[in-house]
Image (cartoon, rainbow, N blue to C red; front, side, top):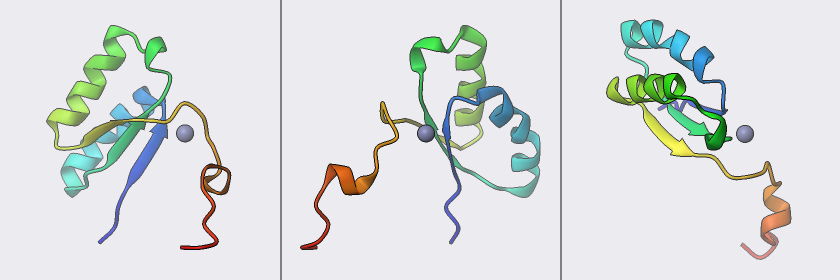
Length: 75
Ligand SMILES: [Zn+2]
């Protein structure tokens, strides 16, 4: 299984992938950042991606290294 994900806020680039994703049967999860900057066209394109079977999820506020969030030495 291959898990395909994209993150940040390159919605127009993602939307341009939709035709080839549909042709090839590929689905992905898009983690969206900077939600306050997305205009109505951007939300419409995200809606198109979702309607095509992709998952739209929220992105964290910052790119934080996992080692800074949790001590992984005892797991
Ligand atoms: Zn990111």
